[in-house]
Image (cartoon, rainbow, N blue to C red; front, side, top):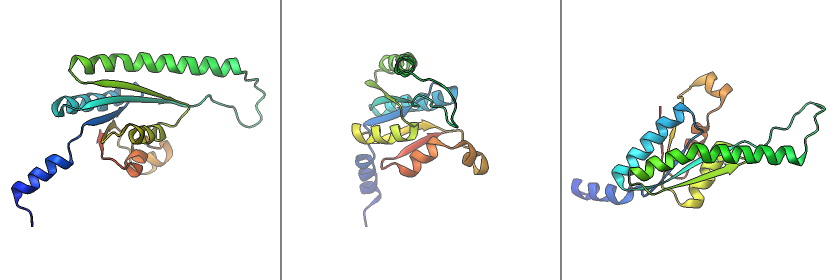
Length: 162
C-alpha cells in the first residue's frame, strides 16, 4: 500500500492538466465555463484551446419547395466562420492578457459534442471544461445536452460548470 505522501505525489503527476479544451457557443452560460477554464489554466500554467462548432446549413424537410444554391451555402458558411472568429477573439485576448497560451478552433458543419470530443482527441487535450444547464429528466431528454454527451463519451476528464 502506498503512503499518503506517495499518493499525493502520484496524484500530482497523473492529473497535471497541461492542455485544456474550453468549448463555447457565445452564450452567457458558456461564458461561465470559459471563465472557470481560464482561471484553472492560469492556476495550473496550462495552455488552452477555445472551440466552437456551427451546425451545417439547414436543409428544409418535408418536400418544401426551396431552391438552395451553392452561393447560399457559401454565404452561410462564411457568416458562421466570421461569427465564430468574432466570438472567440475576445476570449483569446483575455487568455493572453492572463499569460495563458491560447488557440482557437472553429469546427463548421458539426454537432457541438462531436466537435468537442474529436478535437480533444486530435489535439491531445487532457481536460475539457464546459458549462451546462444541469437539466435533468424529461427536460434533458427533450432539449438534449451536449455536456451530457461529452461527459458520457469522453476519454479525458470533463469538468462541468453549472
